[in-house]
Amino acid sequence: MPTPTTLDQLPLRQNAQIVAVDWGAISDNEGRRLRALGIDEGISVEKLYKGMFGLNDPIALKVGRMLIAIRKSHAQVISVRPDPVAIPA
Image 1 (cartoon, rainbow, N blue to C red):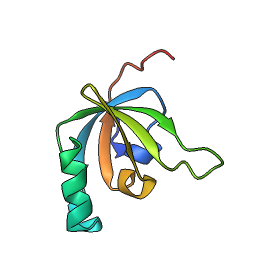
Image 2: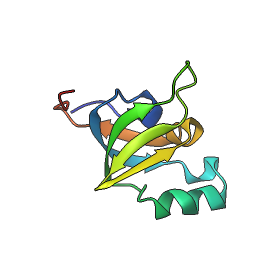
Image 3: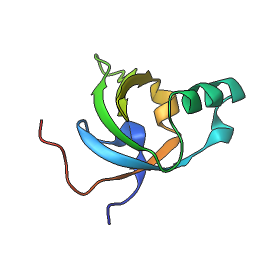
Image 4: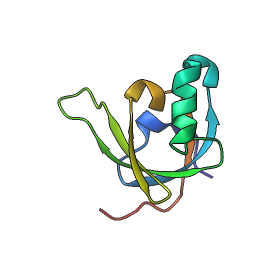
């Protein structure tokens, strides 16, 4: 079984399941926004793109049929378990 990591460290074009979110590390408003976008424990995500020029901010994710963008600081508090099979580019 793959080792959990944080969403910001997940390779591009990789599916993963959210195993934990450190809700205490972000504000209540940010937490409500992330939940409204479908981010929560047990949800499958795919990391599609990241920002340019070394900042890697924002990060684009596929959540269900939606494409969303989140800040790198938010991705750092989201623990994921990568799916064992990577998606071909």
